[in-house]
Amino acid sequence: MAKNVSLDSIDQKLAYAKRCSHEGAKAGAKAAVFATVVTAIPTYACGKISPWARAHLNPTAKALIVSTAAGMAYFIVADKTILKTARQNSFKQQG
Image (cartoon, rainbow, N blue to C red):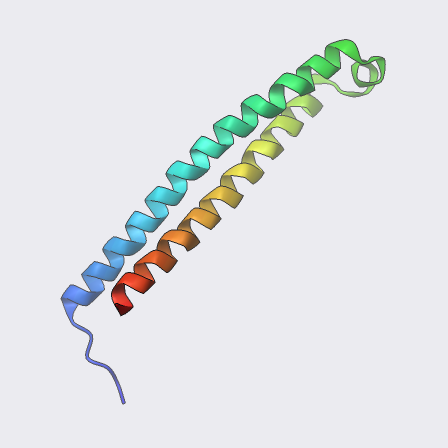
């Protein structure tokens, strides 16, 4: 049996989805900035102090380390935030 879905219900679900993704993107961006700072400082300091790092890590490698940490932080935090917000909205709709 097919459910009747009103246009208002679809609009409300679309608004929830947009809010979830916006909150996730915002939280992910904050996490990426934090991860960049936290990763860049020791990576570049190690490149100045450690003879091994000075010999083996060129500027491209250092940038790759920092950008990988920032990208991972963005996607992990954004995903968790979107799921958390969607779960909260799901409970609100049931209740």
